[in-house]
Length: 427
Image 1 (tube, rainbow, N blue to C red):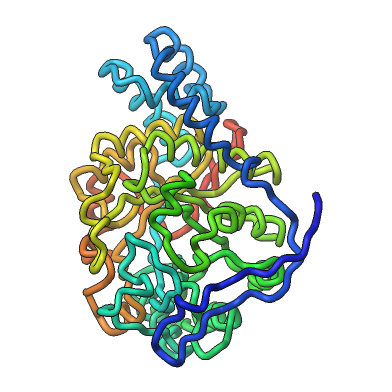
Image 2: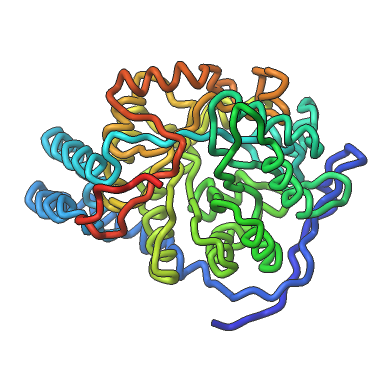
């Protein structure tokens, strides 16, 4: 793989007005060159959807469903046919097979976690986000080391043992990526009689190779990054400023994380920005590319629908709104296409579909999550999403138990295409 030296650019106009926030500009780096076309081929995916509408006959669909039942996964073209078929009988069979596979790979277990927001300062202008740089009404805050430790202790006191650290593209005080590394250490200092956060995942913007290696050395459980939308033109239309505008930099970030030694990675989309059939095929393509290049695919795929966010008009009127029925079909189809990959459900989803989503394929969900820095220790309920999960962790656990599921705070381990080993799935 050819290696080049490149420097990430951050436009000056997007710097936040708060003086102690400084835009982080990655240092000169030497990373493997990864062509986006090797991850997704947009034209091919669009043509696959068009062709699927022509061939989605019951006979062809039955053959695909029988193959999927064997838990061998599906190709892009096969997945497109399932997405295109709207026959009620086929949908019933699809859901039944998805439930069988979900039960085989994860039993009745559902893994719980919580996001821990380190900062809501950002230098990006993303049309759907309350934290976007031009949203002047949004108060900005970055937690210091003591506050981060307090958040970790508060989460542990609630009962959580897994957390995902979330931080925007701006780090306080000119610390650069050291801020995130220091935050990881601060979380580990949050041990108390109530317990500790044993698993730390990180969700931060794309890093250079050196910082990815430093993140790997910090012994995090994994790195997660959502592409938001895989449609290049739509991506450009909703990311109008800041380093996040670079589609290729974002889509290749997980590959760079794997090259740096981070084995567990997660990908995802923000449903509602573009056609969900296309996003499903793009997720499958991305996951397949990771498995092809590294021998194992992503450990999880996050499925989040665009939710109302303060100061964002598009979030109230998604251009490609996804219905409850469409979301459930997406969960089921992805369970067939990627039988051994975890699926994460956003905590914003209504109770009316959670049970079905869990039965069809979801294996992981956020519980009692907050999206404001410092919210757990202070008890703040207001955050960037008006549909935040204000239920207690105990209430979430009771609901899951009532559905017949077993909530756990351990990450689920899926046997990688070895059905004989499916009896022991939890670390």
